[in-house]
Amino acid sequence: MLAAIAAAASCGGGESGDTVEPDAAPGWVGDVRRAVDAVETELGPGQEYFEVTANPQLTNVFVAVDGATAAIPYAYVDGELLEPAPRLDGASGNTFTADDLAFDEATVLTGVERDLPETTIDALSVEGGPGGAVRYVVSARSARGGVLDIEVGGDGTVVAVDPL
View 1 (cartoon, rainbow, N blue to C red):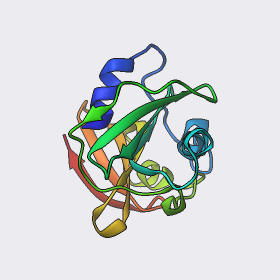
View 2: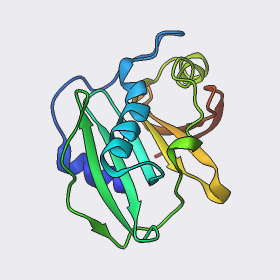
View 3: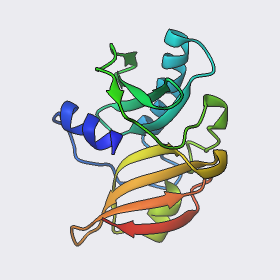
């Protein structure tokens, strides 16, 4: 939900998605870590995050504050952390830290490419999961026009596919 709010507020032009070739993950996948590193440089280490979503245009970072009851949204664009957007009160959900990021940038999208070759990948989200787990969710469009949320493991293994 937080990503939808930020995406609506920050929609821009550009290509709608990238098809991933095995061993050739798009550069924006690494922006998940780079954006988190930029936030930690700005705010200090040990921040908690509700979600980080990267796509070809930008990376949205939702920092959990006040006991995870509010979020401060940041955008990371072209290697630069922008000023935060207004605080989002009433936020809730699971969180994670930078130390919890355990995905392989080179392979996190390859399971989708292999198992669902007719999809176009639009974004990668990292979300706090239950019990301190981290969820990796790929947003994609099927060749028939449907939108999919595809949960993957840190190594790219497809865990679940949910049509939206």
